[in-house]
Length: 138
Image 1: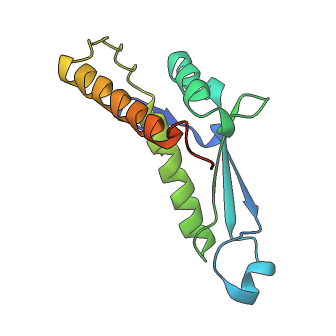
Image 2: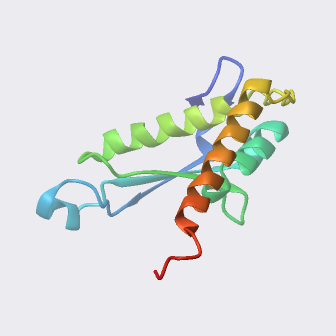
């Protein structure tokens, strides 16, 4: 069981763990041992609204089979990589539990408008200076 919150638990059957060759540290050992970890979770195992938010927020981590894939290969130990992948998975799901706040449109402050106009005027003057007069042979 992987505990996301007190009310949301992922059963062991929902998680698929695969060990892969890591790209991280390990010297010669890295080429022989599969210390990298890839954890897959079917989005169907999560509440539907959370699954939709995950698919929208992390499209690179969702496969065509509607599985969330989280990999970790930064450690030399298979166990530490597994814990790191599970921690990332929990953080991703926790971040998608609450719906995002709706954006409240705001007005551009007058000081920002003034600063923009001053910057545009200054930029125009610089271009005018570069243009030079009619007597230039540049």
